[in-house]
Image (cartoon, rainbow, N blue to C red; front, top):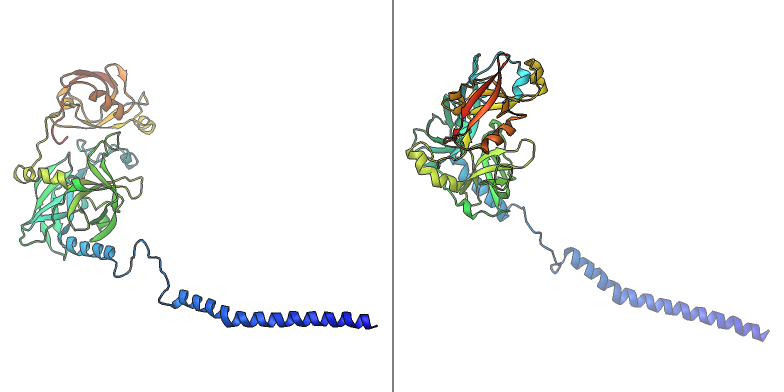
Length: 396
């Protein structure tokens, strides 16, 4: 009996020790450890010693980058103009409208048909206070009337002082004085990744500002090698109507003249470098043109499009491939040889021709002065036309 009592007492003693130890441990934790952890948490949340990792770019109201864009817009905007044009277009009543999508601008110029007035828009910028303005050649090409709209609403009739088809440049003049104008920058110093701003008149939306970077340099729109050119590529949004407007750096200097977009892509636009304009500005102002070096490229002198199955069926042709002539350039080798609009070239030097691209490639491999034999379909008959190739003239 006594032994049983001693065992019970030892168990209660152990439970007592455990309870006392737990109370002491809890007291120490709440007294010394917990306050430190709470204090540390409060410091991280609100305290002045909290460490903040800065963002790579701050887009707040005091951001220097944001201010730069705003300042460029304020500086450049007053010197950007919006251009309205009116030109006379001839259409060919022999073809239904569904086929016109196959042909480029001016394709039916030599065809008889009705005339209508076509309106166009573009952009430009002032380069001298006495009313000299830069834009693209294609903005004012064949225009009967050119109107320049200044910021604020004033409108002026403009005169074309100089133009160049090859470089797609034109100089306009309006009768005004004391105008704001832009400084031409050095496009040779551009770097890929550099920020740029485009201002213009896309889709008739005046004073539209877009921002991007220089995506690439020395691009080409005509060469198979995209890097074999001189154009600036940018991802700043450029749309129809931006043509001729300025592409500027963050100091507001013009480093490019917006020219073209890839219609089947997004954020791929092209601009003519400012150095090209600088180098030829005096010639455009004094001579009205740019004097290019003598071409060594042989030239036929036609505007053409490929024969498609739809066109072959429409014209009831006995063949499915060839090149349809839309326009013959005046005084060209083709004109001197007697080629006519609506002629269809099916062979060159007794070899079949499948497309206009193939025909052009074969011509370019020949020499100036070479005689080529063309098999032509005209008035439901074949005939042979001999053409002596000449050098491609300036602007063609």
